Image (cartoon, rainbow, N blue to C red; front, side, top):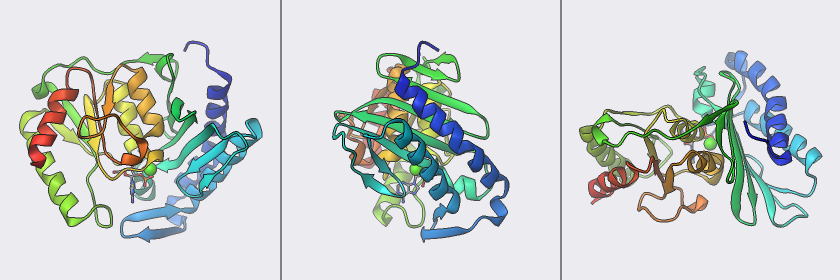
Length: 268
Ligand code: 2AM
Ligand code: CA
């Protein structure tokens, strides 16, 4: 890829270091201690260990930066304008079930803006990365969102709410959205990792993705991947995305509007 900035190299090195133990943990998934935060909401010893390794490596390289992490929460840095946003395993349910579709997600936020992001699946060794103004890459190859222009050719990804995630009302809303999108598209996929869903949109595999009830660490890195790959990212209403808002709608430039319209119409 084009020249990687020192910060991007720091992120990639940290992810590769953490992946060594994570791959071992995945190989022994049957013996893993799995505790549950709530119904269908797993946290594993591997989540905690991976986050610790990432935090340690990033702190070694950039002692002043702060953190927003899925497990440990917010850690203020002495530099108030820079922090890492980390999801150590996005797709924990897949991890626990022995499904090799999960990833580390690391983003760099500077002065409130995401300026770099990586999503790394340690099993497939697919490394997606992007920096502001520099494009998006899969390993060393430049990636772009798809160019499909018709809903009926498009494949969309989403996340399905589950026991413990989303209210009864949210579940009903999702069923309406899915009914509307399946009626006009080539199909819907639900693979269980929002970070990888976004990376797959960036790579042109999915034509778009929508989900609600997400956290900033699920999407921070994926959002810059999609934007640098030429896609549009908003909330479901089509407004500017705030990472805290929890809802996301993304697609290539042709399909963002029709997908959004289909979803909003279904919600009425
Ligand atoms: P996780 O694997 O890190 O928990 C699947 O629909 C997506 O939702 C995954 O990215 C998953 O991330 C995320 N997710 C699972 N449970 C969640 C929860 N309680 N709140 C927010 N996001 C969640
Ligand atoms: Ca996550």
